[in-house]
Length: 116
Image 1 (cartoon, rainbow, N blue to C red):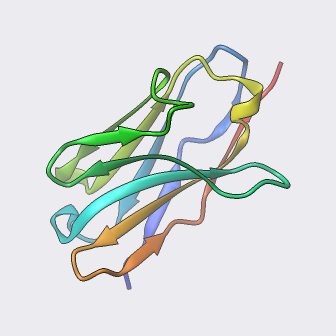
Image 2 (image 1 turned 135 degrees about the vertical axis):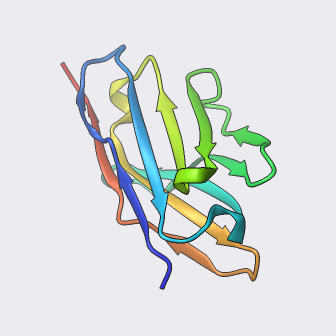
């Protein structure tokens, strides 16, 4: 069973930065892409961006100037670097891996709280 583990969340001041990690239990080469989502209390899950196994990335309009994704294939890990954080970025952040056979896997989420 494929497992994804997010980490790196926490409490940060407005304007601060965090780096989230998504570590996959199997080789990254098995997957087409990894995406990040977030869900704030009382809101629907929101798409943040995708990094493809071949390297390209795309981002939602609301974060593309502040968030960056990259991967460490050797560590089977995808990172989400978040800069200039705002209180409205407060949410549980999830990663999703899409396997080449079409299967989709989710992590358990990591809480990010932006507050003074």
